[in-house]
Amino acid sequence: MKKALFTWLILFLTSPLICVAQEVYTTDYEVQYELTYHLDSTNLKSSATETLYLFTGSDQSVFMNHNTAHAEEIEVNLERLQRTTGVRDWEAAGARNSIFDKLFYKNLGNEFVWTIEKILDKKYGYQEPAIPLEWEVGEEIQSFSGYTVQPATTSFAGRNYVAWFTMEVPILDGPYLFSGLPGLIVELYDTEKHYHFKMLSIEKLKETKTWKLPKYAKVTREDFIELKKKEVEAETVELLHDVSSGRTKIGKAGGGIMSESEVRRSIKKKKESKNNPIELE
Image 1 (tube, helix red, strand yellow):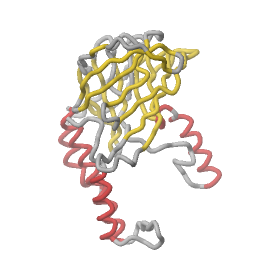
Image 2 (cartoon, rainbow, N blue to C red):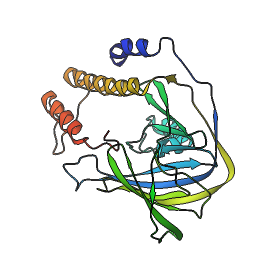
Image 3 (tube, rainbow, N blue to C red):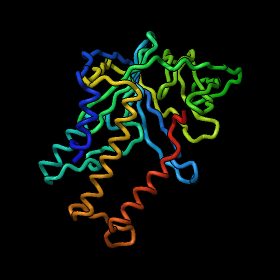
Image 4 (cartoon, rainbow, N blue to C red):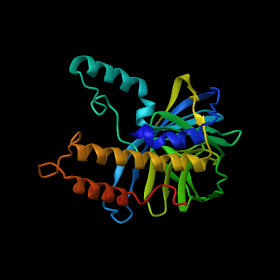
């Protein structure tokens, strides 16, 4: 069903299909960030946390979620579980839920970013200039995990941000799409603290780690967003079809099986709760 719903869109966006030759991104440091966020702006008592990874070097970096950073380890665990239990259990293999399924390949010197994500069975990506953030650096000095840091403020995609950065590490980078300060961003949050990044650790790699830009279909940012919408629609249609046909059964929290109408209400409620993306504009 997914393929049927997507045939027209895939043919439109990939005719002809454009794939970029692999490029190598060279990184020398691994920086881990803890992200605490609120997806529902109407219920700020509810929050979620995940660990994100920045692999960075002198002029290139890659930002990713836990599953991508540990892809090889997770795959080994999946194969072991398959052999021993007959089930490929992603959670048991070490995979984690994430709101950051995109990979960001940043060219810090050339100031452009590749954004890539697997949508259904294909990888799509688009290139954009790096965000020309206008930072205002403050004079206040504090300490963060043993590093001397100072603040800077900027605005991006509908939010006002405060960053704390250190010049004691030879990295001019930060989490997500943030960079451009004379040092490493160790903490970053919007003024309402709906999204809050805090550095957990930084490690100088024993050997330079390289990342190959994967093959993907090149699309515009607008087409990419449209693909994501169609993916959500297709998954919803397929789930409802499987529930109505009895192929899939979803349990209630208090016991019993959800009816199709209850599943519809649950999907609608879940969709409405995701009203606070990191980029508002």
